[in-house]
Image (cartoon, rainbow, N blue to C red; front, side, top):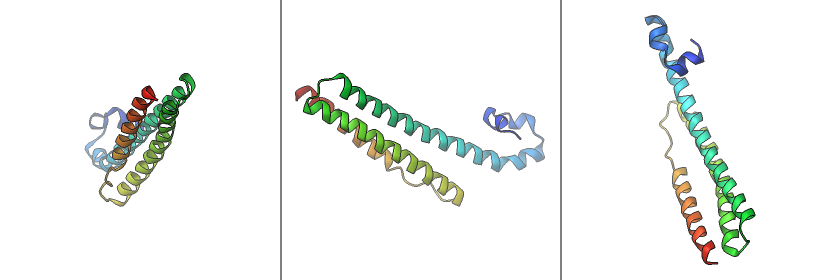
Length: 128
């Protein structure tokens, strides 16, 4: 069984019943690993977007106190989101390998707080 067979979902048609029974747990593990990696990459895309927005704000707008605060919140938030994504990826890998349940997702709460802080900073940048 190749990775491309797993990715394209052709396991049921291409494999004999014995091979399907043998491939079952492996394909579940592969699907989990790929889903966990996609989630990690989504966190990293979000972090890069925040970093790029922060750099753009600092370079394109006049550097008043509000604009500076917004840029720093976005850049700092991007770094925090990148670290949280890596932490989440590692926790999920360990939980799956140990057969434990997935850890709670507190990182989403942190992301929401960072976005709200960026919104407040953006509103303040128009006033200051």
